[in-house]
Every structure is written in C-alpha cells, then in structure tokens.
Image 1 (tube, helix red, strand yellow):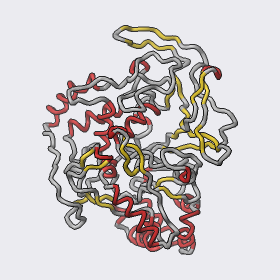
Image 2 (cartoon, helix red, strand yellow; image 1 turned 90 degrees about the vertical axis):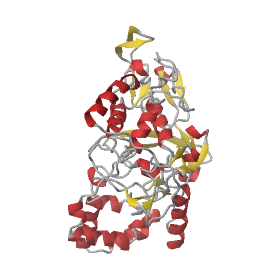
Image 3 (cartoon, one colour; image 1 turned 180 degrees about the horizontal axis):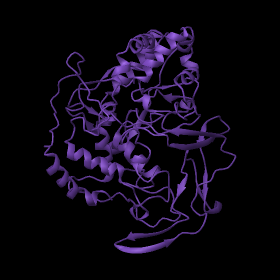
Image 4 (cartoon, one colour; image 1 turned 45 degrees about the vertical axis):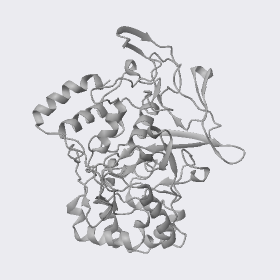
Length: 443
C-alpha cells in the first residue's frame, strides 16, 4: 500500500517545498455570512489551507496509486485507483468513467438490488445494485503474499459478475468530482434541511427536495444528512472513501460493513486489506479523505463570467428559478462545529467559508431518475441529488448517465419538479437562452 512508501516521500517533498504544516483552528466563531470568507478555488493541485503542500501532494499520490492483486485489488472491481474515475482536469475531479447499477421491483413495487452470479452461476451476490465490470479472474499475476512471491493463474471465466434479464432496472452513473468536497462536508445538517423547507414554501410545494439521513460509518452508524453521491448516500468523506475502496476497487478496510470483500471467489488476501497504519495513524482511506478535504473548489472561467452575456445569463438563471435547486451560495459551519454525526470537527480552513456549488444537495424528481434506491427510502427511486454545477464546463457528457452532450438538451430533459422552470426557460428568446448557457459555460 501507499502508506509503506509515504513517510520517506513526505520528508523529501517537505524539504523541496519548505512548507510548514498548518494548524486547525478550533475556536467557535458562529456561522455568519457577513464575516465569512470565500473558499479558495483553483485547478492547481494545491491545498485549500487544511494541510501544507507536502502533505497534500503525498495524499494526492495515495489517491493516484494503482493497486494490484497482492494489495487486495478485487476479486471484482471497477478501477485500480481513485484517480481512474476522478481526474479531469486535475486529480480529484470528474471523468467520463461510469459504473453500472441494476435491480428490479418486487411484487410490492419496491426496488431490490440485483442478484449477480459468479463462477458460472455457482456463486451469487444478492441485493447489490452495483455491478462490477472487472475481475482479477481470469488473470496471471505474480504477487506478494505474506512476503512471498507467488504466481497465480486463475481459472478462465470464473470471476466476472453476470446478471439476468430479471434485472429490468439498469442505469449508468457518471463519476462525480470530489474537488471542494471538504467544504460540502462542513455544511451543517440544518442548513440543508432549511434549504428543503424554504424552497418548498417559496414554490408553493412545486419544488420540495428530500433530505435523507444516512449512517456515518466512522461514527458507529450515527445518522447525518447525506450529501455525497448521486443518491446522497454518504454524509462524510471517510465513509465515502471506505465505500469506494471496497466497492469500486475491492479493497476491504476497517469501517464496517466494508471490512470484508463482497466475494471470496479468486481471493488471495486477508480482510481487511487496507490494514497498515503509518506514522500519522492513517490507513489509505484516511489519506483519501484528507486529500478531498484539502482540495480547492472548482474555479470559474472569469472571462466568461464577467462577459456581458455571462452576467446577463446569470440573471436569467436566477429569474427563471434555476437556483431554487442549484443554489448559488452556501456558508459552511463555524470552525469547531461537529458534523458527520460528530465524527468530524470543522477546521478553520473549512469553516465559515462561502462556497458556490450551485446545488442544494437534496434529492429531487426532475424526470431523469434511474429507479435505483440506495441509502434512502423507497420514494427516492426516481430522485437524484441536484448535481453541483461548479466545474460543469469540464464535462462533455451531462446528467447522471451521460445521456446529454449539450447544455440545451440537458435543460430540456428536466421534467417533474423542474417543469415550471423549464417552461420559463422555453419562453426565453434564443438569444436569452444562449446567454444563460454562456453563464453555465463559465462554471
């Protein structure tokens, strides 16, 4: 694992950079937008102030590390590193990589995750909506197990997941950006709940986002308001890191239920696989979380944002109601505030900061839902999290499944709760619509 190499490299990076570690402020100051500062932004591979440059670079290299079979990769997986899905235009951002989710409705109309089969049908993985599309079998690899080099020649066709025609609900999910996620984690639960209440009141019930309370793994399952993932399935970045390490890379780790691989077919390592602790007291999942927490928010294209069309388009974005859900400004909690079920205390670098995510982090039915239920109740099947629009200019494929490639078509895909807003958009002249799209291209 990266933790075995990390300490030597960290010393080298520190000598090169000459940077000193930044302390984390813990004094309560109260959430006050009038005294809040703008969160730092940039696609520059530099930290937001949570860590020094040397620590950030070291954590980024952990995020970028390519895992092998001997380090616990698989037996089924989607990627060999975090960076494979989160890279464009810099490490931690989004990509064109998608995952497959599947399932069906039972006799009561409730969603049930797919039953996947392995080993030519001899092994089943029930009630799991994520379908991994890669496997270490068949493979021939020389790996190190318990300090010994061993050659493994896995049987043909044994390890790949398969689903049947019974799984009538299938969808793709685009990889999301993690840049600026430390600020999102630092939004107090009540602020998100207040957004849900105020938008429902303001729109007369036409737009009523749903907040879901999800378990925080590192807080012994304490509940907090979800905000990460297409279904708001996580409230903390450490929980997200643990989930992704197991389910996207097949590397089990200390946080239950992710401390055991989902299948033993072709498995050659011992759970939990992310078990080595470095001098910081960290496993890999801790480095992933700290990297994301220390990342800057995506920057604006200031030339477009300050252009005549960009400014006019921003006004239309507000006037027709897009920002009912795509909320332009949120202030994070004060330093010292416990969030994520009490498992994370907002540090000075992340606290009382103004961010512009263009999201309310609530689940909505806007006609683009995929029928999948994750940590939320059954009524969330056709709902998706309002995707943050910061950084959207770096994406070619839009919506949760990448079905749209233009902003105009993406807007037209909206229905349901967004019907009134889309009606307003369609009443704009073509020139006005293009001005609004110019604004989107500046994000």
